Amino acid sequence: MRSKGIGGTDIAAIVGLNPWRGPIDVYMEKIGLTEPEPDNEAKYWGRELEAAVLRRYAKETGLPVYTNSEVMVGEEEWILGTPDALVEPKGGVDAKTTGRPDDWADGPPDYVSCQCHWYMGLTGAQWWDVALLILSPRREFKIFRIERDQEVIDELVRAGRDFWFNHVLPQAPPPLDGSTGASEYLKLTYPRDLADVIAAPPEAQGLVEELVHCREMLLEFETAKAHYENQLKALIGDAAGLVGQGWKITWKKSKDLVFVDWQQAYMDLCAYVHDKGLLINDEEFSGKHTAIKPGPRVFRVAAFSEAQAVI
Image (cartoon, rainbow, N blue to C red; front, side):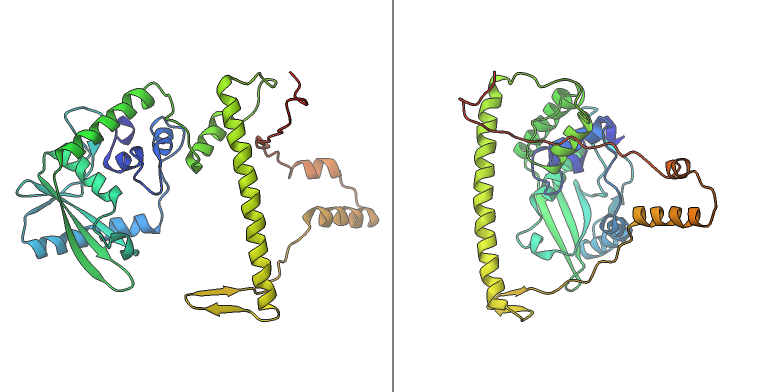
């Protein structure tokens, strides 16, 4: 069902509030260009602890809690969601776990509030609670209530509708940014060059100038960074590092790397076999263990003066 519309975990990424995903990541998943995010330990334990967190919530509040495992569909068929539980009267609750309590110091993070408002729009609930289990540095349980804000819900629906009908259905990607997702989209969409160099469209000139400027600034910062690092290394000298007020810098030798030069080992083995008078077809044997890995497209910029330009 996730490919049939926009869900609660999608909408925060679409409006730019998810710190781990962006609009292009949601787009690629919806059109089948990438698989859903792989499972990890955080997701696994979040699911495993969900029932326990909801039980604690019910005990603390005394409210009737109805768990939900089905995908719910809103007034428009592309509006989807799977809230953890509905609560009487006219509410809902999502169970969360975290090992980063500082992110919740001022209440639920924006991406969580966004998800809760999406669920309120989906279900008609007037409030939504977030039951939070803090795992470290010590166990804590907290409940946050988010009141319904219809203006926020309307904005989210408008953003979701625009994304679904103007990007997903026509398979037109959202504007590309500097995210890893945007780079992945370009790599998957244009894996190889199929034509010769083409004349630049008008908008390319400004982009190239900005890129060259960014690279110049980056070089300045990298030079300055190396300068300060070298000054600190000189202060460290033969010691393992420095400790100051609120900071610590170390400069230690890392563990030696051990590697095998398999190509040279193979050549030496073939020579040994030949010396023993045994026959071996080197090309046939090596061919069985040779694979071709497609080379990536390399992005290079050659900037030159107008006098050097070749039209």
